[in-house]
Image (cartoon, rainbow, N blue to C red; front, top):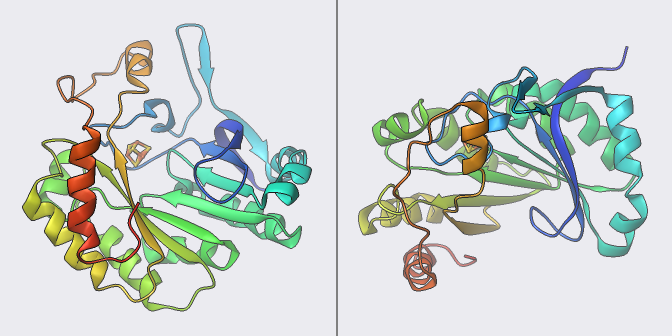
Length: 253
Ligand code: SF4
């Protein structure tokens, strides 16, 4: 029987989240509760309905593969592929691994964006089938991490170290969501830079500016948005933050 997964939505022709044109598959379910989360409708694994909208649907691997191959021609012309995002793909690691495996067998590039907040045994299921792993690093201080997202960062740091120390045939790209007043002070940036600079197989680091997309979904789902007063960082602030990380890591975007 084909494995089943709970999908939030599928977005086609994205130019973010990997090379070329991407079909991004957002999954339901995430163990974290980031204060700045822009996809609150991806947090619960169960399908939700609110304000006339339904968030999520169940699909088998076969059904999802039917959706993936619809974009095959775009993938081949743009060197693109699929990207799993969330929610948190590792919450459905067996399902994701099987879709990635079958996608790679078709010669299509694969990527996954993950918080990596799971035991390595779950991550290990998907690693052989990935071309690109985007790993989110939200805060370097474990206690602060717990305050902000609900769990400490031990799994995340350990998983990033283990992937970077091994020789998986994939690009490891670490993404830092830059949240003003939360994780963007000089000391935190230098500590993140030191950690990232110590990694052997790190392809690049991306600093992603805080944004307020998704705030209206909180209202729709009756959830509180915990950072109502934070402003989007300026481009000059982003530049100085990138400069700090660049003093430890060669490729920073
Ligand atoms: S890890 Fe991603 S999906 Fe999960 S709560 Fe944080 S921002 Fe939202």
